[in-house]
Amino acid sequence: MSWLTTLWTLIFEFFKTGLFAVGGGLATVPFLAEIGEKTGWYGAELLSTILAVSESTPGPMGINMATYVGYSQLGILGGIVTTLAEVAPSIIVITIIAKMLTKFDQNPYVQAVFSGIKPAVVGFIAAACISLFTSAFFIHGMVSVDLINIKALGLFAVVFTVTRFVKEKHPIQVIVICAIAGVILSM
Image (cartoon, rainbow, N blue to C red; front, side, top):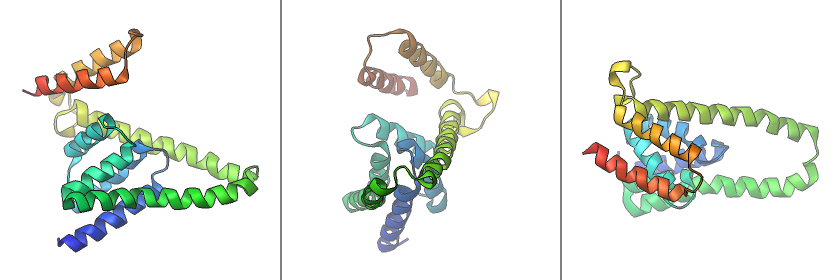
């Protein structure tokens, strides 16, 4: 694939992702999975790494993931282009909605549209969570008792217990400790 074709593919795919990934960063995961499958740029395992890096770095997760993918394909230019392509639909749509919503915020049709979008967003996020769950806890993402990643499952159990029962914790501390544990466990 030539760099120009790659550039246009990045722009198109991430504009589309920014336009239809309603519900925040996790809603972009199904789109990113599809992009990885279509283009061959990354697989499910790298996608989970991209998600982890994007979640643990400052800024919106979906934009961080777009920037990471763009940078991995075309360097700084790719990172900039995918970031702009990802946010452009939001800027366009929010500008239009802001103008219209003041006129139509009590309209029953507008309320009905939002009532229909909410379950779809939950479905997308649930699908992304299931995909990430299998990717994180099963070796090669294949669901089988023989392929359970015991280290990841153990780390999850510890973090889950700590976050449920220890009141004086900060998310940054948990992320840093898990990152260190991940490095140690992967050695």
